[in-house]
Image 1 (cartoon, rainbow, N blue to C red):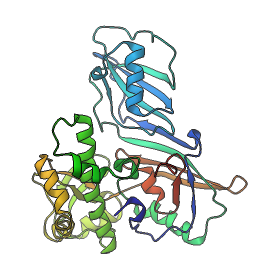
Image 2 (cartoon, rainbow, N blue to C red; image 1 turned 90 degrees about the horizontal axis):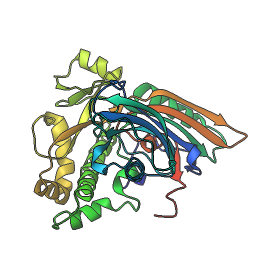
Image 3 (tube, rainbow, N blue to C red; image 1 turned 30 degrees about the vertical axis):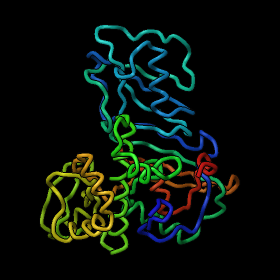
Length: 345
């Protein structure tokens, strides 16, 4: 199953267009969810970048500020073909922020504040998107209904194409390479993530296909919106009400060893996927993967769409929790062709 063939809960999109025709068409701002402490051994930098991956940005900062890359932290990976802002930390205990050795190439520092701790992966709260989809002439009634469904009921929290590599072959690469010695840690982590993401997407697709995505099932483990706290509870009217109001979501397993797995019907649904993907599961077991849980559904905050008929483009804005993909949101109502990747597949 590829990201192009994943089922979505509100029907097939009936419009299509192109994204990332230029960097300014895809804008994303990282929302920390907390303020820098104003003191400590680290400098937090809010950086605007364009035409750089986050690892490339780290390399530039390392060279420009004379700091080893290991002393630079970041929370999220941001697209290369986009105009984005994100936060990074520089470990400079007792030192002022040095002047960069050269003018920033592809980035500029917007803000710098002292902070007590290094930024770790996944510590930011959300990402705010402003995206243009080009080639859209009109919004049919079916599309308007899909937009309304997204706002009222949330989005299916699929992993996006980015998780599976430029050519979409990270799962195949993982099965072929993960058991080899001397694989670099970063590459190993990416390949393990691809395998777990593939199984999660299959579980989510099954739940949508079985029409048990917009309602909880027996044995679901729930995640609380906002805090991401995880808890189990028997199905009752209160749980169903909170689910309908998007206060909580059912979760799916990121495959690995550990407790807090779903039970009853939720586990049986997942086991169907794991039995069919036995080769992937066995590979993850050999790598010592540990169980994590991810919401099957997320609420889309500050969601708005505006059609510019004169420019034949749809302007989309949304705020998504950290770890959720804007491309997966778009898949609910438009077939979006990534202009930056179209020639690489």
